[in-house]
Image (cartoon, rainbow, N blue to C red; front, side, top):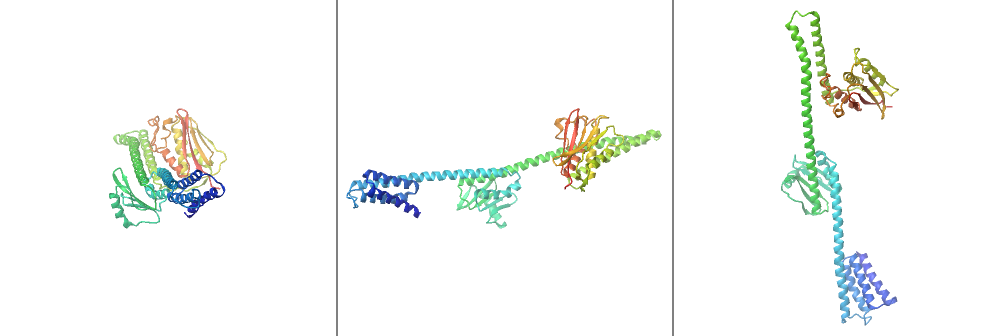
Length: 474
């Protein structure tokens, strides 16, 4: 401020000195130069600088340039006219420049507040979970607005979230609840302190309190609106997700009931029929009784397999299965699967191709189940005599094991569903017996090992199932 005063009067003294000592010009030029100085001061400083300099310029103009030179007299009308011109220029110029500065400052403040609102909205859009949003909201608002304390109170559950230096205790909750229910608009009665009501439609949702902010009421209302919309959006997404989960759970429950009912009814019907036939006729020949007993034995095994797979799927879902990982040679895994999974009566020849590969970290028992599931499916969904190819190779730092067949194939529209539990391809569901759980179990086992499983297929040309396993650490 002192520098401005010194600069203003130094500029006036310089003009008077130059025009009175060295550069002799007429009175009009001097007056216009002084007016220009006053206008510059009015535009760049404020009204008081321009008025003070205009009074001093009037006296200097009268003393140094108007006759009688060297004397101050205001009797002449020219002196009054010069004084009036200087003062008018100072006042009008200052008012105009002040208005321009105020409008520029307001425009910059509006721009900053718009950028603030945009940044806050972008940050809020990245949070979809309402629990995470509520806990992160005070920190986000404090970071964007520069507030040193932000407190978020939600009526639902009397929950309090805060960020900053002035923390509130639980004793403040009744007061915040009362304010949340009573406050209808932004309250900025205290300097740097603002209370923003949060609403879900017209229903009060909570209260947002900011301390240490200097924002307009419009910006504060925008922040409150963004916070309310973000909470509404997160809650809506959560409800949609919950609804979708309920629908999926209901669909799986229906599939489970249908699948279990169908799969249980078929072997039970066979067992019941065989047992009834043996009870109704005590004179059956030995061979006939043996055939009926064999039916009972096979269908009992089928029931046992169904119950075992359902139990295993439930254990995998609840992560109650304990796996023991150890380094195993890939060739040993494939050789064991080739010799034991399809049995001696298999009608499909298996060709195994295994290059030199690092050992993999797996639970051999569970990976054996995966290989058996894939080999048995390849045999079931292929014609007798159709070959099956078992191979392994390195892929993106992991070992990829593939089971390929030349069977019936899978429709492209069903590839995304083939690993869902109880799902069976529509074209083969009625022709080939199965539970629809083998691939789901295989996927859960592979993912528990840190790998992935996928399938590529073409109708009437066969399928290739590939799963990856991690290699032994160096």
